[in-house]
Amino acid sequence: MDITKTQLEQIDQQICDFLRQDRQFILEQMQKHYAVGQKTGRRDLVTSLDKENQQRIIAFLEPLLQPTKILAEETERQITDSTGLVWVIDPIDGTMNFVKQGEDFAVMVALYEDGRPILGYIYDVMRDRLLHGGPGLGAAYCNEVKLTSPENLPLAEGLVGLSGPMLIANKFNFQTIEAQSLGSRVLGSAGIEFSRVILGKQVGYASTLKPWDFASGNALATVLGLMVDRIDGSPLNMLKSGVVLVATKKAFATIMNIVK
Image 1 (cartoon, rainbow, N blue to C red):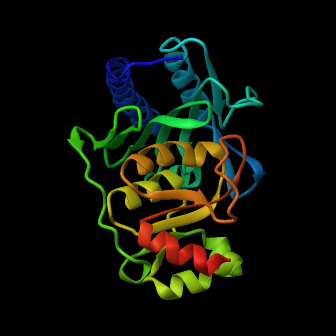
Image 2 (image 1 turned 45 degrees about the vertical axis):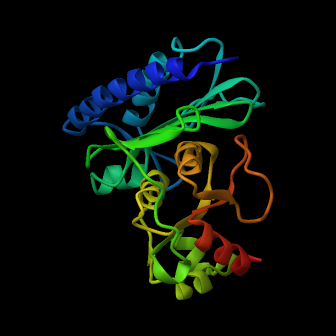
């Protein structure tokens, strides 16, 4: 499907407007009772608000472009191929942070076509910071400010976000990555971690991620000259989970040599 840049700019504005309204919805619901349950265990939470917000997002996105597929975290409507236009949704990324801390969580939406990123959105709800844009627009923005590519710092000159469990277990030599950096950070939200790399606050981030964890960040990072890939060398796949690394070009090269 051919979508013009003008159409994408209009869609981008519509999504930004919706997400700002959605932020108000979330803030209001946080003051009310919501149910908290477990998915795979006590460290993998889901709330009634995750599910309700996902339905709100889907109801808004589906009419924007036709036909489109939906790949979303809290639904049975998973897809089996990535051809055509696909919306990728994480209604609350960092649910544990949302429940226990009330911060460091994000709403994420992305648009892909035939497996390639077109648009991405990461909304840091509590900081009211919306990252949006992507290859379809040829730019990325923080709220209304156009972003420039972060400085291409090496691993030795920056902080790096790493999965806590993987760091403790030294999977893929994560302890060596940490030792060669200026220090590691563990935030518990892929969206917030991607945001920090995109904004130049960290030189990289690596963790086991599902498609809805990395889809938005990949769209934004790519347009800013950052590197995003699976650390096992296999291609990034919008239908598969894996250990994903986003980093500056210099840090990416060093980290990929360490994990081999």
